[in-house]
Image: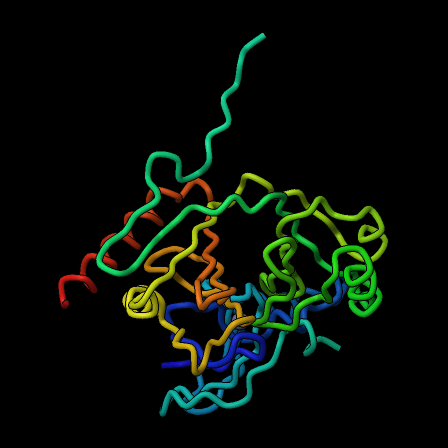
Amino acid sequence: MRIPCPLCGTRDRREFWYRGAAVDLERPAPDAGVEAWDDFVYLRENPAGPTRELWYHEGGCGAWLVVERDTVTHEIGRVALASEERS
Amino acid sequence: MVELVARTPCAGLLPLRVGAVLLDEVAPGALTSVSPYKGQAEALSKVLQAAHGMGFPAPSRATGDRQARAIWFGHGQAMLVGPAPDPALADHAALTDQSDAWAAVRLHGPGAEDVLARLVPVDLRAGSFPEGHSMRSLLFHMTASITRIEDGAFLILAFRSMAATLVHDLQTAMEAVAARG
Ligand SMILES: [Zn+2]
């Protein structure tokens, strides 16, 4: 598996560290309530198909990346710097 | 007063020649990480140009020469190699003195690319990695910065604490390449 880093180019999977679903980019406000925080901390989708994930380019540029990946085919879609994905 | 004796990171380990490939230690001078503040990249590049003679490097590139280099070192970061940083740089970037924190070696000679091909999961042949290109990747098990400098040589930076491992891994690969004749 290879991931095209926007800064480094296409790199081998061994250079990356996997974080999980890209929910960290939408952290609830401190006063968002128990339900929103419960959802943020514990509840994850487990799709067979496209996912949006956070990967860390640990063995490369050190950037956090938002990676679209298909869990069925392992096809990698769009990859972007997490720093530019946050609104 | 205690008399402290300066030792380079690879003292006693280098230089090394295996077959046609050579590995030397480099005395890089001062090392300063330069991270531009948000929206300051362009202004920083101008100051860098005026003070040290080269612009801020694009991702996967290095600028400058033997006297002063700016090596792209990761997301929003470059390493100024050689001169003490001009104080004006601090107006646009966070500066951190990293002198003596990195081991710097130069790998060169015919077959240097074959040596790195055994350790680095990126194509470093001249066709895809010519002079002025730089990259962060893994050198066997550790992270490293690799730059193609003058005369086709590779400048490799790794953590000083891993200097012996760096030399060991390179030497093993050099011996394997030489054994193939
Ligand atoms: Zn990268």
